[in-house]
Length: 296
Image: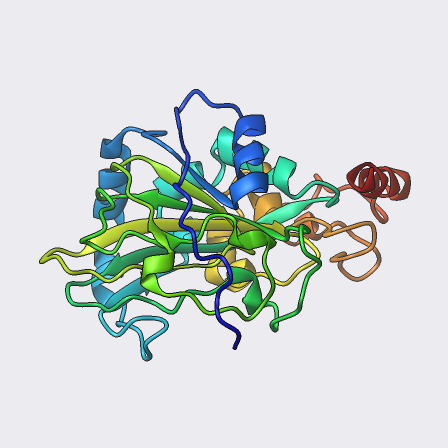
């Protein structure tokens, strides 16, 4: 793969928790990433970790260097954590995703994962998350993912803070980066790193004696397949008790005008909440208008 032509490190912009979604989208469009400091009380994320502790303990470490042989990646969080359900629907996050993924009829949850990086874990390969889509070369500047990484613990360069290459979302595909060409997303517990699916990034090396915990919640255009299959990760008996907006965010909704319906053009929400569905296909004129607005 070609070497990185973007050799000058750019600082990660930090925003106040009062920043609006337009400000976050502006930073993402320019740099591919930004941090919002102390968006939630750190105690909320501490409770999340406690709520998930039995699941974390039962999660095996990764089987290769990319997933991390000293790293546990615990998923299925909508089924397992009431706090995760709230954070998935955080107003700033959803408004930012809508702004960044402009032109999509809808977007959906792509992944829910608590990442626990153990001591002595080496740095992860710097990569693009959108490579999950079979390494398809999306057009430069066309974002398909809006990602968040919440700091459950303080993120530091020593304990494996995620490393990003600000501005690399505008570069070509298949590039290689060294640790020195990336910046650690250092932030206090309760803060959140926003980043696009096209920015080059990777988990940092954990050179401390403690495990670093982060909450990865990502969103993608709804016509793309989810990385984490929400229909199977969340048992039907749990899904039936969830509110409609969360179900639709999970994927129980049309992905576009004519994507994702069931049998006789029924709204997919019918699978879990009969009686509240819209009939037929989606709104064709609205879909056309959204795409047209995004092109202008």
